[in-house]
Image: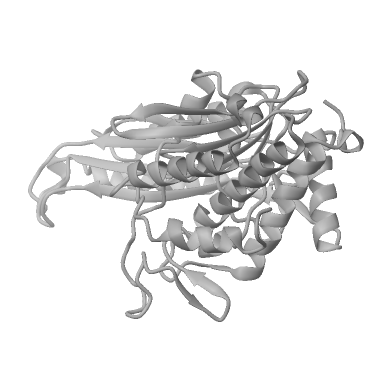
Length: 406
């Protein structure tokens, strides 16, 4: 059966493959995973495994989702582990002796881009798949409940991989769906919404010594920024998800210091908690633009919503949550904390688009280390997560006593 350190060694192999987005993208790592699965199926060589399906879905040119499915004998919802294969760019600032693709191990920590986000979690999910294939071969029959591993593309950009899985019918409202993002040992079941705006202000150029002959678009954008910051301070706070937040991630405008600027543009990231949603955020943006137009006569504003992801609230009655907590508690011999994920994940996309109430996150490592130089994942986290994902699969695929609802 799967060795205790299977996922640990596999994580090292995955980290050494550049799958940065933008950058090398997922082609090589997808082929690596597909070959690993096909090799294991050939080694096991049992007729019952002929039912296992290996499917690819081209989401973008040369960028394919991969799904491996072990069918179930019943019509119960499948258990699905979804893991993204891409990482953020390799980036700068790494220590000279810690190369981003080196998979260096020090003090029981594995360093490299994607170590915790989320090649460690991907490796743990692959370990659970391999364990399931081995168990099917050993028992000579398919499990009661079906199981799929989905490896997705583009999660670090527009999440078009998870959207494609929905459009292709790979996953919908019935499945029990778990991603393996880094969760600091928690089960994380809720997400702030993520709404993105591009806001533009236009004005009139003039010589900086005669600003009254122009209309300063940058000054108008400053009015927009300040108005939105004030509006966010006054928003209601969600009991679990906390406060809505706003970040002005990028802003540009103007030509030279001595020219009144006639344009400015800002890219805005909002993380929204109920009851605040995209409709409410849009009203705030419109009010901010109207205020800026009044404060800086001659300027005019416009906006585009470029991302609209709803908040996902906890469902305390989720059968997947009950089954996952049971598995995690048993493996760790502790009461596993149930919290929320501050970012947005593939399972949040699925939950938001299909109203699936059995979508959540559990994986090795810490989100605080993701996207940073010297990213790492501890050995103990990989071992724990592999054990939990295998226990969850065993409990809900095979064990009738582990059927916590349907």
